[in-house]
Length: 246
Ligand code: IPE
Ligand code: IPE
Ligand code: MG
Image (cartoon, rainbow, N blue to C red; front, top):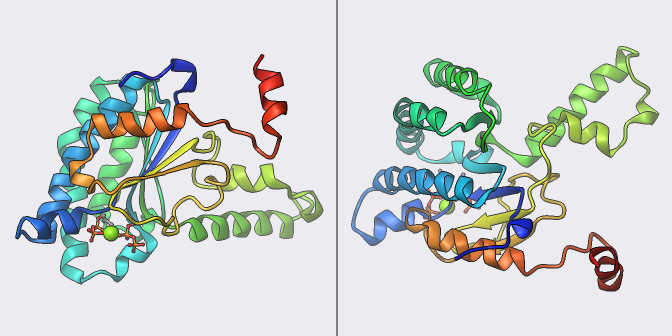
């Protein structure tokens, strides 16, 4: 499905949900679903780059996912290490800049090292920016920004009365990236699950029942086509927006 280039979202955020149900439907362990999910990540990164998306932010592991059974968490962590080992060279060849957001200090030392190496290796790339959210929570993000600003105010470096929306936004994990234009959630649930709470303020929301391991370019195309038909008003009237577009 082709989409008018001007209507392609600059930034797409994805809640990759449904791996466990995908596996269960096949009589497999949940881990098989997570493995299959890595293939869908690969396909989505390629599709995003092809369509001209500039930023892709994937929710891989939430602050709340630490509550899962220990075995599943440890399998997921091993899978992240393996995925980095396998995928980074190809991402680098494709000019993708890899970044990670989340409480990375909560991760094992081996994974942290792999993450740092991947970020460093791809830091000069100029193509798609791929943000992977690991041990990430929207509330964690906002609280951390508040903490950083409070510390600066306490040190006399900034005036607390001058803290505005731009100051908070700049301190969030996504920092200078534009806000997501489109949020995709697979797996049928219609909730945000503590993803980018601040940054999603004006995102278009697109939900699909497709389970994450089955997500492919065709489904991504449907999300982009839906987005292309939206009028983004940001509080204005439709008439005001049309007057500017003419
Ligand atoms: C998403 O799939 C992957 C992670 C949260 C790590 P799930 O594992 O949540 O799959 P379901 O929702 O149980 O099907
Ligand atoms: C959201 O999926 C988190 C990720 C996709 C990483 P969950 O499966 O954890 O969400 P809930 O718990 O059903 O809201
Ligand atoms: Mg889930």
